Image 1 (cartoon, rainbow, N blue to C red):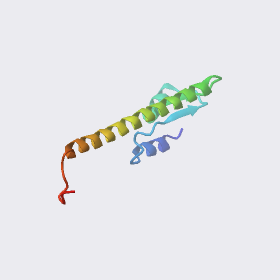
Image 2: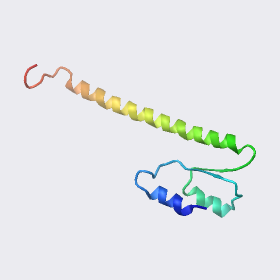
Image 3: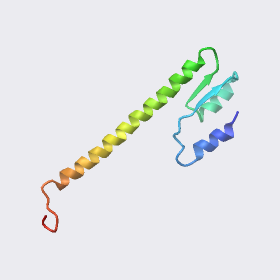
Image 4: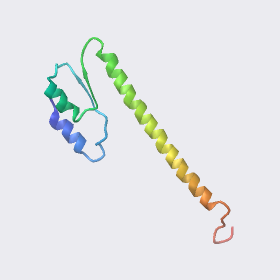
Length: 96
């Protein structure tokens, strides 16, 4: 397993919250699975139906990113709205 790679990704500044899905054909022991789950958000073992599961997992992460991005936009807009409210009715120093 690429534990060193997983650890390096999670320790890299800016990638700490990067969602990681492990897609493996290997049957994992309990200790291997626990070790991987320290770094990965999801582990999918290849089976006949695993391709649908991997699509579901990726879709879930993309949906979460979309929700977080909408929250960021909403927060930014709220910040601008608050600034607009503070400046409402105020005049510039030049009197324009």
